[in-house]
Length: 384
Image (cartoon, rainbow, N blue to C red):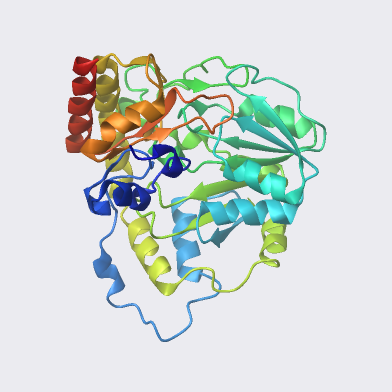
């Protein structure tokens, strides 16, 4: 029996998993990493990249493409990083918070760097007590949509509360691009407010546009940056654009805050290859709507596969590109052992605060991968 737990503390470790199984990494069906199974650009765009000169240290063309794709209010700016994880570490090193509030569960990078910086860590369980008070002057971190459950929150009331407490606010929107709202049929997905109650419908837009699905970009906090200079937005690009090997993320904040942050950053954090690929991906604007619609449809297929097999006590209603489920009998490591012969890798969530080894997360993959997962889960059920 392989020690499955060794390579399940973070999603996407297909190399260790494949080594344990004696197969190639490309033969693994990886449901553990929340990466879009489609890409917005091909590698052809890299053929003309000049490798001799240094890359642009100011990332001019890339920043222009990012600001067109993710416009901020007047007075806001962005700084790019070698992935969202690098952005998280750099921002917290820059802020040096005394008190850090984490709305859990969330991924472990934040708690890790908080420990390294010697912060006083305050954890609020957003499942149990989302309206809990925060220390005045603290730094608060909220991931929206949340991970590993994928719930999309309406943060308006939270923002008001945090501002009243003079908090520095960090919102991680790495999965927001996957979300959409359906207002054409008079309803919207489960967007939650500070009291944990579904927020009211925002209202359909007039004319024919009312029949279209309204993108959840109105849930971004970017527009609030112009009104609060201690608000920071973190974004990963690799997840939505299906290119985890291209490490690009960014921080958006008020221009003076970005200028201060940049003073502590090295030059040439990104290669010419990274920038060329991401500029091409960002230029593919049709990819945005296609991915959102496809994610919604495939997430429904994944939900049915998990529900129909009868192995799960609960499947959480997520709006991102993954679903969290709680097993009814066996734990997540036992399920992974049973899935391993089929080269399927999942994410056991016992290292998320408040969750147990019975909680497992499944990324939304393509239709063929979901069908294979469903077949394996039904086989496991039949053998119990």
